[in-house]
Length: 285
Image (cartoon, rainbow, N blue to C red; front, top):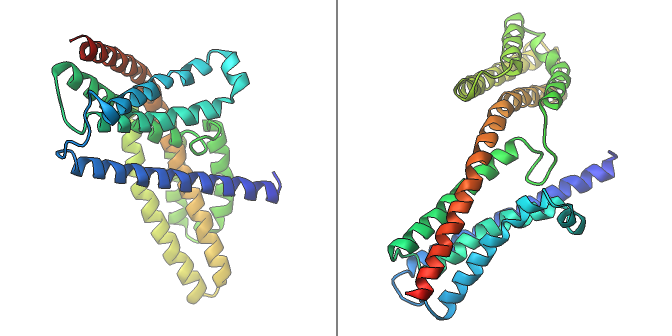
């Protein structure tokens, strides 16, 4: 990829990140406003704007089904690329619950409406968790899926760049090698992988501090390196340690994403069933 294409890719990611932050801020402000005015009775779930918000929110939640369908029906992806279906899934998965909360005026009601509401909030919370895990095994929110081989290759590349630092100290070199061995070894379950991430995080911070002290001494006391070299070498160490942590975390997040995927779809269908029951009860009784 040439420099111009890389710059455009970075610019696109920054714009996407900015839009996510702006949308999140708007939603949070809207929720705070709705919560503070929940006792003003300015919306009614059974009529007017409150009723319309309920229809819109339920429709948005129903549209969420188009994303899993688009992965199985080629007609959908021929019309709209899969990444855009995913983007709509993420957007409507947030906006739908927001509309429903305003529809309910941030209050609980009858038994069937409470079940529908809390089912929806459970699915929305599950979606937030899934989004977090998803970004740990993909290149950004809409990027390609990572694989362990790519991360290991990146680790080896950063290892070469950082080797100038820990070659200055044999003990430091052994600790770097021990951390790399721990990061690259196969995972032995979710609990073991989680504990390994915690240990590697602590070791990473310790090694980064020691590397910084070592490089400062090499520059100021012995004059072995220049200030520019010190900065470059420290950046190499940071990239190397970050890649090691990401490699270790990848195995954990991949397992968690598989488990999350198994649970999320049944929760979604449970939400849709309770929503249908609520709608029928509200209109028939």
